[in-house]
Length: 258
Image (cartoon, rainbow, N blue to C red; front, side, top):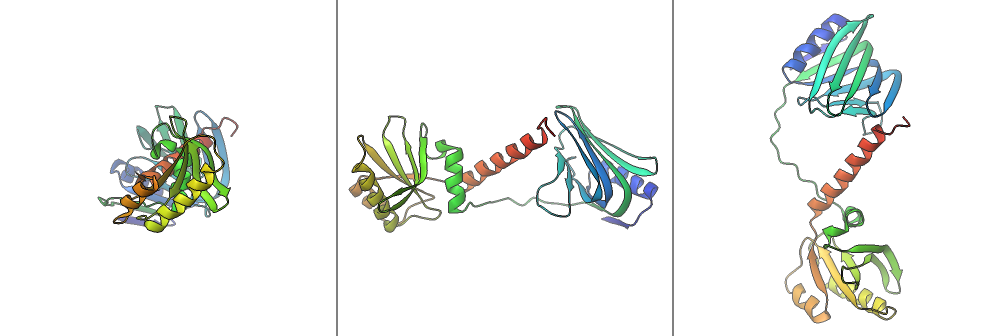
């Protein structure tokens, strides 16, 4: 680990160049301007920011507030040029496919940290019940193939139906989603919703309890009530939301109106 506080421009250049070659994780804070060129273009006027260069070459530009980077570039095939130009430190990251670049010009460097990090831990992210609702809305096939959404949080006399849709055979489907192992109460609640929908529908109605699992003897209750269980994995729901957010972020930075 190497740390420099208020380094000179040449000292900063030498440390960053050496650290990029060694594939260290680099954190630079200071006053800088940022220029992006690719399928879109953007300019960030001078301000104090944090630049992170990861060992795979990914670059992120963070402002003092907010959790999302204001500029970023993936590390795949990235090439870095670090030099001093007109008394400013220039970090220029270039990517060939697709063609894009991020150029950061520091007029002042406050702190540089070069870190050799080791991380082999497995990442597990577990969605909330609300997240699981959102994931099914984004990707109905998480529930079953051919499922099409009609509505969500649909109000009926006994309460609110989490997800309401139609299956590939044209049957209406009432879905109750639970974040944890579903118990008998969830099955009975779903049965009330199904009966309420059946009283007004002119076609067959299915009731589906979607959860990571069901408690002992709940399957028998479901069968007695004519309901079904579908395994809904919170981890897959989290991955669906994460991919959607990543795509949204990528589309933002590739917006030609920037």
